[in-house]
Structure formats: structure tokens, C-alpha cells
Length: 142
Image (tube, rainbow, N blue to C red):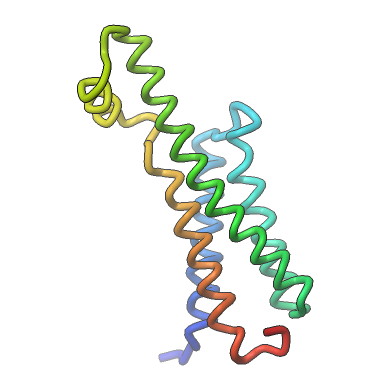
């Protein structure tokens, strides 16, 4: 079996997650408005920042990567709020009399947009931060 360090393993999972999430967003046409482009742009930026950090480790590449990963966390929280708002608005259009717990239940029962799907951006951001931290002890740029 191929011996792989923790940092390399985290990098592999991170890149796989970025590519998979990007592909899913592209295939599902998550491009209807400017806000829907944000996760795709973040994914592309993260891949570029990772490549820079891996090929030219230093303070600048580390800071850029960390900033992008922190933007993933903010983007995930914002995405959850936007998806939730979309679910609520759709339910209120269908039945304006809904409110409180019944509105919440109806919104949660719908499948589109998936309210917690943007949480994957939070997971990817945290995974990326773990990858970066796992290498700090062994890198010159720590």
C-alpha cells in the first residue's frame, strides 16, 4: 500500500471535493445569477491558490490560501441563508397563509433548493484549513 502522509491525504480529499463540487454545480447549472457563480469562482480560486501554495510555499501563498478558505466558510453560511430564503419564499408564494412552524415544516419538506447543500463549502473550507495546518510544522513558511 502506498504510504501517504496526513497532509497529502488531506490535500487529496480537498482537491477531490473541490473538483466534485465544482462539477456538480456546473452540471446542475448553478449559474442563473451572480450569487450562484460565487461557489464556482471560489472553487477555481482555491484550486489556483493550492497550486501556488504547493509550488511556491511562502507567506504570501499561505495567506492567500487561508483567505480563500475563510471565504469558503463565509460563502457556506451565506449560501445556507440564501437557500433557506428561497425555500421560504417559494412556500409563501404557494400558500401566503403559512407562518411559524407550519412554514418551517413546509419549507424543510421541499427538496429544492437544498437548504444545507452550501454546507459543503464550510466542510471544504475547514478541510483546507486542516490541510494547511497539518503542513505548518514541516514547512519553512510556517
